[in-house]
Image (cartoon, rainbow, N blue to C red; front, side, top):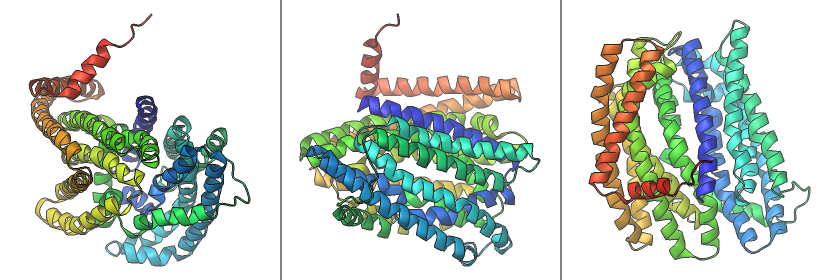
Length: 512
């Protein structure tokens, strides 16, 4: 599982870095304004429909089905089930996107009631974005086939190519003298077609999966729907968090852009740490659940969650300390002003404290999915979503944009804690008793290290002045400071995770 996590983490890291390049281009060429909001809003309706169809959970629902066949040494049955579900999903999403293309004007009026002046351009932009969703959703089925066979490399490349497509679209627009939202969106369509569909089709074939015309496994669709229906009916706050920015970001001009810029920075460690841990662990958890090894399943979940919490807490400390230089270094060009950088940096500090919660969510939710208990994380997530909506509104009234970021962090943390409680009830609290001290150590370490890093960053920034070079120096010094303080606190609290890292470094093979 460690090798799989490294492969997934590496792919996500590269994808997130390219995502930051993409966001930097958007910030410099378009900025924090109505045009920037239009680009974000263009994905709102296509993305939400995919969420309603459990598009974000396709790999989660399909992997247990395929794992059951593979665990029973029936690769032909797994292939037939894969082909049947692919046909159903691909045809279904294509038909629904066509209907959405036709109904786009009416849906835009319903969703974006606070911004009527955006309706006409949003209809055009939404229609451009729609084909990308067909490739993204159907490509998820192709990735699930590879994950079930423990093939992680080619799926890890998909978001890299997707981001390259968006970057390429923006650069082509710049070369043509029109770096508009349209050119970025056309890049997204091209990137999804190549990376999320074409390449994944080749990867699925290499894993031995075939898209046969007649599979003889129509029961696989019923099984898929039984697992997916809870995910379609219930909407998790983890899935809708990004959509909340589109909905509530209509309140003021540029709000959606500012929140998205901060959230994108925060999603880098979330992707590399939390998402990578969940994606890599899930096929192993599904195999353990399929073979009835409950004790080993619980132990694997608890161990992965503890290690993820430790690294996530270190990432929180680093982001709190480096929020200001990161915002300036990545976004501080062109149309993105110094005032915009200050706003995004403040939002990032608040978002950073959600990273451990994302780590817990990614692993504990997948534990339940592996056991086919879809209703548990979905039911908890839906309940938290009901709480999240008034929380976003109330905290915005009290704190402005910072209130939106705080609402996201608080509701995500509530969701993670509730999942841990449900997991504890199903495992007689054995794992939770070991997980709680790890969480407290991480929280203390992140808080103290972040508090230590920020004044160091501010002092050095004042002495060195502005510019890319000084900003890089400030960032490096701040990173070393925060991580050193975090490691010192972990050592003082006798964190076993720190000792494990030291042990692995001692046993690392020497370079030739």
